[in-house]
Length: 366
Ligand SMILES: Cc1ncc(COP(=O)(O)O)c(C=O)c1O
Figure 1: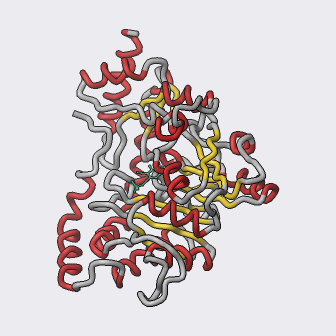
Figure 2: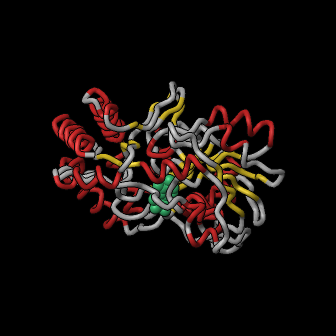
Figure 3: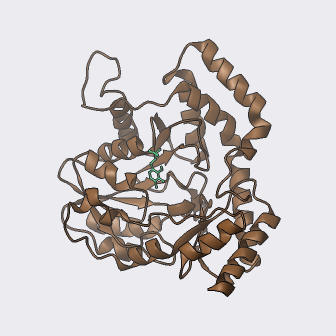
């Protein structure tokens, strides 16, 4: 059996350290925020080369809080891709703003300056640049657009902890960035967790207020915020894992290179990696004519594969409300043709070769 991702094997050698971190928190009696969260915030800020990091309850709250912290208000428009996890757009709606869906570049599966430009209006307050499947969105190009049209850039880096663009880590490329520590992420907690990073002290201060009922002292509430704080236990455990993230990501990159050298390109089209991008392959996603048939052949060979975002957000019933969805042809094509193949910090060359062999068999039987 080759699983789509393997969250268990990489953690096994760390079991002793994990146990010690749990004991440390249990004995401290501090379970929400506190010194563990502060220490993890400092270490994570350092890791993404951002000046500030604010630990929150999950990646969805991180988006809601970051959007409000950069100044998005009820009624504003926020440009978002539709080919992403639902939470990217849900967070916009949850703060009373309006998501305006933009298309993607079918090769990178990410937004581009052109697809974002086509969705801008005088009411655009922000753009959410999702680093999809761990590949950085083209933030340099978006910055040029942002300077012309005066909007903020929020990176949705939920899938991209450790990725870089032109040597700059995801997390310090935009006006603010958000991370999810959902267990299957490249840096996954033992439950929910999230982070906002920014180089803007005012954005960080607002985010700190918003995560904690709009107050710093439990007496005076200056904003209507949320209860969205990172647990000390999750922070302590993430502190054990963070030092290993770079080597786990390097293993994922080596596995992606192995897919390529094993000839995956003969049977499917991999996510295109623009020059200057250092992706972290949260998922290894290819496009092929009939992903459902390929997944069946792979399953018969004991290989797990899955299509993502088959119904992209602009077609979700909660979003359309029965109206005709906007036209996003590249999004629809990639939603129909993508297939995620196994990748993880523990996958072996032999396993990658077996996946490519099964794909070859599936292509021969098509
Ligand atoms: C791109 C993207 N954005 C946002 C989220 C939301 O994160 P969470 O599940 O921690 O709320 C996720 C992950 O689940 C995601 O993949």
